[in-house]
Image 1 (cartoon, rainbow, N blue to C red):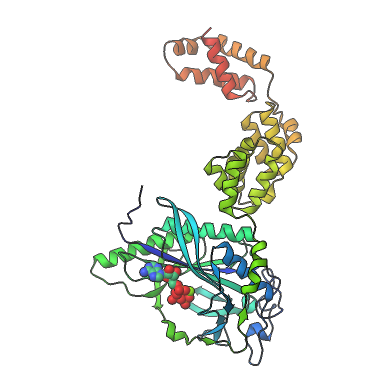
Image 2: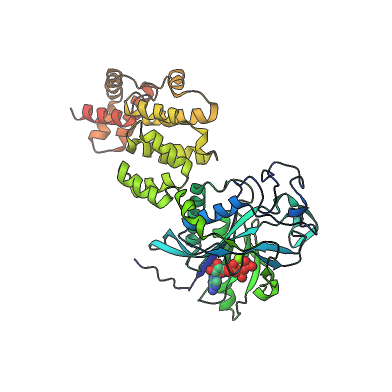
Length: 473
Ligand SMILES: Nc1ncnc2c1ncn2[C@@H]1O[C@H](COP(=O)(O)OP(=O)(O)OP(=O)(O)O)[C@@H](O)[C@H]1O
Ligand SMILES: [Mg+2]
Ligand SMILES: [Mg+2]
């Protein structure tokens, strides 16, 4: 199957990733752990941009950026350089953002995603380091705000802007790209994606191979997909009515699910980029071999290995390798029980229960899931009881063994099931006659009676087989 892209859709993302696992900010010693702090408490003259303050580059930030670049299959530049991007806005009191321009730290990479027609390669144009500006808090909505508060705790945090080629052909592919990117960054241990502001995307989109519109303020995977679906529809309608698409910046209104025009797109020359005189050019070529050694096994490689080593299908392998924590959890479980059982219980059952409760894998222990799988595969409890134990541990706490006892979940002995089958058949002659007369549904009725008699502790599938055997005697 080849995807034709009939509407000529192109989507390119600019993703800002905050390297919040660094201990200090990009150009000063302020701590990065501000997320639970009062506004404007993690600041100094440098990150406030006060006149006369001088930046000192965080070495670890450069190292992390190289690591990201390598993980995205980029070339790392020999020598990098910072530039000033000039603009006037209260989120940056010094009136310029220190960023990179013609010597970004990394360029020409790629990410493989699950595309509309199978594996699809998305080019990475470049990844560069820049400082995060302050956080503006509008009172009300951005287009109709009475006033704005500014929190400078965030300002000076290390960002990497990762710019993709316009290689995505649908909102779904854009979402897959963002998910894949997050997964890779998660593996690298450079950021905690759950923290506020850890990852932000601007989506550029065009239709019929035309000019792009940039949509800002996207804050979730779902938001990205919705914003793009809306924007593509808007552009197509606009063209259908004889309109023309001009380069502009639009804002995604999450609550209303629409994009609103903010301004025409600023041109590059508007920013008057020039080299940052307070920071010398930095030769990074020699760092690369050492940083490369710190690269972990990445999601694609781990997925392949899981399929080979544990005999998992692609779907399981994919689901189990999206998050590094889940992958590690699975491998521990798989070292103690049959890996295929481990895959089913961790990926299909446990993850489902966790997602439903918005919990991470940390909310469950390897020991407990191993106990549950052991009970089920040892034929001590039914699968349904296994699920019930997981739910109970998550909702009320407790240990699987104790829950089994407290709730009386041990499977009833074979002879008790046999007796219940015997009784159910004897007590319901009409249903038996109906079934033998061709009414398939009556079988369910009789099995239901067996389950009632065993208080649900019989395995429903086994009970069904036993009833069938009895009826066919
Ligand atoms: N016709 C197009 N349709 C969709 N996306 C496009 C098109 N042309 C370019 N793009 C995408 O637009 C993005 C441009 O990002 P880039 O950071 O280079 O510039 P910018 O948006 O002008 O700058 P800024 O960082 O100031 O927003 C890239 O992701 C690129 O793939
Ligand atoms: Mg950009
Ligand atoms: Mg942009």
